[in-house]
Length: 280
Image (tube, rainbow, N blue to C red; front, side):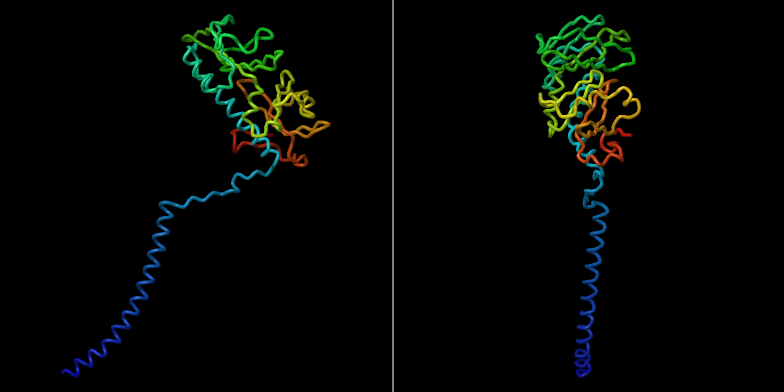
């Protein structure tokens, strides 16, 4: 029996060792599988963020240039417009103070009655006097905002006018004003951007030096052009421009820049993915 037991013991050793080797291989495979499964599960529950850098890649360098120039400027104008139109009754001093604090580039605020008489203004003494009476013509039940540009001896002054009501009765306007040339301080390359007032055929720029070809651009038949499209390309004798019209209330102003590549003009200007409006 001892011999048998010894023999059994001796014979069992290689069997046990062989079993341990097999178990070790299986354990490593199981660990690898478990690790892989955990990674897959983690990626499903908490995926690693991946940024597709080509998703918003511009196909047209002219679009890209204009977008980079005008969008920070336009954002400031739109923010001011929303603030002004959010008030539909006669504003008080606290509202005017808050507006000037939030938009320090605004020159002043005016509150007028339905006859056009100024009731109050802040600051009391304006930076620029009116060159002529401001005329805001509109059906105020249908119009939330109206613009008037006053071309003074000290440069242009843009006025927003928004109606005030008591109940359903129109009782006047509250206005904000600023020199539109201040908008170029928000542009990353202000020397490359121009803004056109198509009604007055005036050009606004960051310097007193007129950009080559800009007045020819301003003299285009914008009334007819804007009936058909809101963006596009125009070639003057000196330059090739990419342009885009933007509304301030019911009125449109033109952002323009010299095209980055004048040979690319067959794709139109389509800024819809970025700014919520389209081109031609």
